[in-house]
Structure formats: structure tokens, C-alpha cells
Length: 305
Image 1 (cartoon, rainbow, N blue to C red):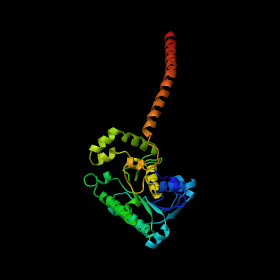
Image 2 (spheres, one colour):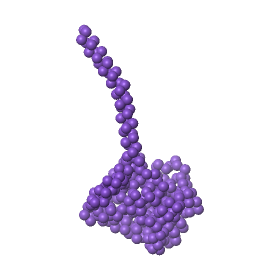
Image 3 (cartoon, helix red, strand yellow):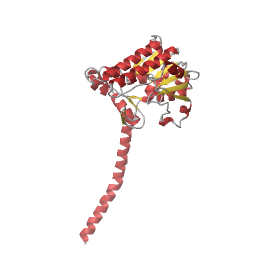
């Protein structure tokens, strides 16, 4: 990247959905770069993992419901940022909730950003390959989810006056990270996800995914770390040429726009397994002869009685 996260001092950035899984990590990356960061979210809370962290103390955490607040209220909370990052989204089975949470809430935020004269926007959307599954592979209610994402992308582009060089759309398939598993929303830990990312990044899986249809294709694509998604969003907000003006679709392009390390979960798991096998072999080499000798002694003692 021609610009790094050290370019933040003096910049004002608003993160919509800043208390969430992705948004909070965007706040962390930006705060550590020296940017002035405001998080707008329903709860307005600091995420649990950041409560005692120095970066969280540098963020202004504000509670704001984009769906119920008036334009004036949103504008007052928005202020006049240089950049806006949006990580607002919703999941579930209710089409109305999906449309509002992925579409209308984002539209309200982007319209406020436009009124504020924002210079740059980055938005977390969804991979085109996932969207392509909606017709034949996904339940009907998912249509509202994708419709909402499309509404948000259009509003984001409109907020920067139609200038795509001032917009970054990040489109992951599946995002992993953190230290726990979950179902709603679906989550896998960093260690597990890193292993799957490394495995599915191998050439054989890429070639297989390229020729398979629908959800099978998506399942064979490598997931992406939440830290990489956050770094891409933060980089775009700070004006990095590696991210701003780009549509980053899938793990490979998202990772290429960041300084995040390559996934090594599979390599580490293999190394751990080898280590444990070595330890087991060493134990067996030492203890099995002792056990056999003791057994032989017992047999001989029994026979002599």
C-alpha cells in the first residue's frame, strides 16, 4: 500500500456500526493510526474485548438508531467527518428486518454523510458470488438481504457524488475471527478460520471453486479474517491507494489491500500435531518398555507362586 494506517492524525472518521464485530475493529485500527474516531451504533457500547484497551478510550462512542432518528439527529451525531466507514448489517429470516437493517439504515447514514460533505466512504457489503446464489440456492427471504445491500451500495456511491475513486466497497464471503463460535450471526474463531482460509487458498481448491456452481462455489472460497476486512476499510478511510477507489471482492483482494499477515492456521495446526505426535512417541519410547518390564515381572512372580 502506498499509504499506511499511520496516516490518521488529523483525520475525522465516523464508523457506522462501530460497536459491532467488524465496526469495532475498524475503530481500533483507526484509533491506533491517530485518527479522531466516532462510533455510531444502536448500543453505543464499547465492545467487551476492548473495554480495558487504550484504543477504546480514544473513540467517541455514541448511541444512535439510524432507522428511528431524525435527519437532524443523525447529522448532529455525524458532524463533519473526512471519511465514513459503514459496517451496519442485519441477519435473520424476516424480509422487513433484512431490508431495513441492510438497506434503509445504511441509506440514512450515507445521506447524512453526503450532507456533511464527506470525502471518502468505505462500506462492508457481500461478495458477488454469494449474491449470485439468491435465485436458485437460497430461501426467498434472502432477496431482501441482497436488495438492502444493493440499496446501500447505491447510496454510498451517491454520497461521494458518484465518484467511485472516493469509495471502497469490501465484499467478503464469510468473515471469521474472535475467540468464540456462534450461530446467529454465524461465527468461527480466528484459529479455526485461519486454518480454513489457508487450506482453501491452495490452488487445487481455487480451481475446484472456479468450476462449481452456487453455494458449493462459495463454500470452497476462503473466508477472510475480520482484521483484514477492518484494515481494508480503515485503509480506504485514510486514503490508501491500495483500497480507496476499489471494489475488494473475496479474501484474496481484501488481503491484498491490507498489511495483515497471511493466514497460517493450517500450518500451525500441522506443526502442533507433529509436536504432539513427537511427544507421544517420546513418552511411548520411554514408558512402554517400563510397562512391559513390570508386566513381565508380575507374570514371573505369579508363575513362581
